[in-house]
Each structure stands twice: as C-alpha cells, then as structure tokens.
Length: 354
Image (tube, rainbow, N blue to C red):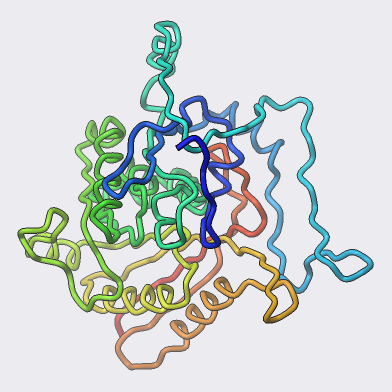
C-alpha cells in the first residue's frame, strides 16, 4: 500500500490534486478496501474571500469550439500562473500512506480558537474508478455550496432534496440554512460515509434545529426504497413529507455518464410531478474538455448530453408539467478555497404543474 495503482478508469478530483491540506492523509479502509481520507475545508471570512477573488478570477464560459490551439491545430493548454505572493503551498499528496502523526496541543488549540463553525470535515476517498466518483469531492459541489451561502435567505427554513449527494458536503452546507435536507445517493458504503460526514459536522446545523436525513434514492428505480431491513430506507411519513414540503432540489456535478444523466432527468420529472408545490432545481456541472479519437477533436460529450436533456425537458409538452431553465451567472462570492474555473456552470430549472 505504498503506491497507488492507476487503472484506465481511475479518476482523481482536482480538489484533492490541487488544494493543500494538512490533514490529507489516510485514516482507514472502508468496507470495500478503499483508503479513506479526512480533509478539512474552511468557510472563508470576508477578508479571506477578497484575497481569494484576486487569486482566482471568475471568467465567462467558453465553448469547446473556441478552445485555443497552436499553429498545428493541437490543443493549446493555458498554464495557470505561478503566484509568488499567494499562500498556497506546494502539494505532493501521498495517496496511500497512513499518517501516524498527531496534532500538537498548540495546533489543536488553534483549531478550537478558529471555531469549528468555520470548518467542515469530510471523509472521502481519492483516485477511484468511475463508478465510485461520488466518494470524492468535486469543484461543482463547492460552486453549489457557494451559491447556497450567498442565497441563504432564499433557502431559509426550506425542505430540500439533494440528488447524488456523494460525500454530503453540499447537503451539510444546505442544512446551515434549510430546515430539512434529504441527502440521497446509492450504495451502502457511500451512504455510510455520507452519514458519518453528517455526524462529524452536526455542530453546523443542530443548533438551529435543522436536520439531514441520509436516504437511498436510485435514479434507475421507479420508486423509493421502503424496505425496513435496509439502513437507509424511506419511511412512508418521509415520502409524504418530501412530496408535501420540498421546494428545492439540488445536484452537484452528477452528469458524467449518459445513462445516469437520462435517469437523473426522469427522476426530476417524476419527483416534480408528485410535489405539492412548484419546485426549483439547481444543478452544477463542470464542462470537461476531452480529446477523443472518435472525433479527432476536443469535445464535451457528457456536458453536451446534459444540455440536450435540459433542452428536452424545457420543450416537453405533455400537458401536465411546465419546465423553464436558465443559467445562473457564477460571479457570486466564493466561500471555499478551490479553483473556480470557467468551465463550472450552474443551472436553474423551475417546475410547475399546468
């Protein structure tokens, strides 16, 4: 376990690759033998956000067709500038080495003085196969978390459903302002990790009597899991509460596979058509540019399919539901340290019955 073995389908999030983190070392193995890490993410104060905004300016989104190329027509990668005045440390993550180091008394006191209210602690994996990317943290989750904190008054006291919650980071941020958050995904190991993260961060939402309920919600299934023998099943009362009181649905960077994207939009339609109130869905996504041999060009296939599904949803004329969509400008303040690249987008989908 001294070195990581990368397979052809191994994926590593830029969040784990680029951000310095003193507690970015392995803590344990999960039930399927994957190393689990603990990372701490600080909610930035006003002065910190000013410094961060000057370091990582927000740029307008561009299309794949406008990607810069060199004189031979190859992709011209724009390198990030090396900042000489920033406080970012060099990052050399040791993926599979377990730390035996402990915090000194001074470091522990420093964390307590800073206040745990400003720190979100997340357990996650790194460098997973594609089917386990939900166990990592992605920039789309931070973009959506930023938006939630900026629009706190809009979400205050609401009942919210998160689809594809992964590690639960966005649900935890949402619970700081909302009343009830249904944090959903699939897989017992992932849901157990998510539940642990909720417990690790209960100080952020319990004081205002908010709650997070971690539940299984399989987009490929036609209904909720109500098997009482399963740990993350739904009760009948919770299903009624979800349909009667939910006004917001959120999803952070969940569209990377066409079949799952199709299932996501089927689930959105089914949920919206059963909700008592009009609902608003916010979906963050990162437009990932890839050079494919099939096209012999740069393309964004997963993103293109996502946009196709969005258009289909808006053009739907079944006489039952009406969906409207609009992009949300990502010029709002940044509360977490991550690189808000131009390919990060946030979309708003409003659903109402006819």
